[in-house]
Amino acid sequence: MGKAKVKRASTSIDMTAMCDVSFLLLTFFVLTATARQPEVLVVDTPASTSPEKLPDDGLGIISVADGKIFFGVKNPNVREITLKNMSQKYNVNFSAEEYEKFKQLDEFGVPIKNLRQLLSLPDEQRTESIQPGIPVDSTETNSNELYSWVQEARRATIEFNRSREGEQNFVDPGPMKVAIKADAEEKYPVINLIIETLRNQKQNKFSFVTGLRHEN
Amino acid sequence: MAELNQDSGKGGKGGKVRAKKAGGKVDLTAMVDLAFLLITFFMLTTSLNTPQAMDVAMPDKNKMDANDNLEIADNRSITLLLGSDDKISWYYGQLAKPIYPPTTIDYGKDGIRQVLLRMQKEVPQRADGKDLIVVIRPSEKSVQRNLVDILDEMRIVDVKRYMISKINSDEIEVLKSEGLFND
Image (cartoon, rainbow over all chains, first blue to last red; front, side):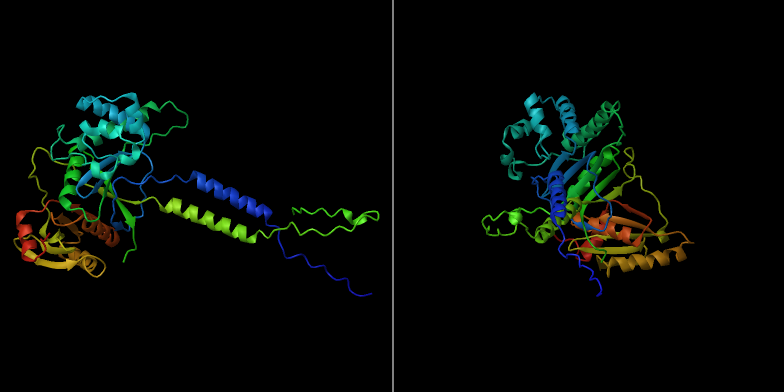
């Protein structure tokens, strides 16, 4: 009797299941990826070798480009409380609708008296060219609006964290962090004004937002 | 595998000979390739999108006395004056009687980093084993990139003590004389 030949297994593999899984994953990643909103103020940050990443929450960002200063708080709920505190401090009143619009506003660069006007515009008209930047100077009074914004945002963060204390599995994320996102070509005096504004309210720690580069 | 053509007509009792349909099998290899390529792309772009943060800590401000300056031993400190045109002027000791007088130097690996590495070795020998202190003084003609670059060098070279402080008029004169105070 001759040897029984071992039957060769077919080389073609069934790809259907693999295809299913990969498309499922693909769909998942596409849906979970948050679409990045186009920035109002385009900032070309310098690069550093720092391995630290910018946190996603509990952060206030001061953007600087062409001498204009913009401010934004990451968390929409904190944003709302911040605006409430600011409206008291500067005696500018906002309607419920305007609060809702402000919650959607990632960053802005207008004096507080012009904020209502900015909020009344549709999204696509809130361009950089109509926003002159937030007033900042070396004082600690109401004329230094950036000082007030940062201070009120820090208070709002604490207030917001307190209001969540009762929730299950709640871990206090701590105070708000401040990041300065300045253009690579921004002159130092403007940066210095911001740093001094932060130091005046004992916010001695902050981060510079940078890109990533190699050591050499 | 999903097969669309159900060839059940084999044992047909003298039925018509059916024309064999084209196979329902599709080669999915290319489709899987594409799907994984897209997955990889989305995964990488979502995580790489977050920018880096460079942490800076400033000393507490003394509001009572703005001229409250910390005294540092002359032989421990080098001062970096950030000028215009992406150049630095650095000196060792006090400006009035420097141990090394102000010298112009570039940023980066072949410029300031070599100086910092050399001084890191030299300073402990001169100052009884105490380590180097770097004072960074950005002038008003320097830009944000200069400041980030120099803070980055501190991290790369691992300088333990450094601070950002205010430039004074004598130092601005130094920058002017070296031609590093242009717009």
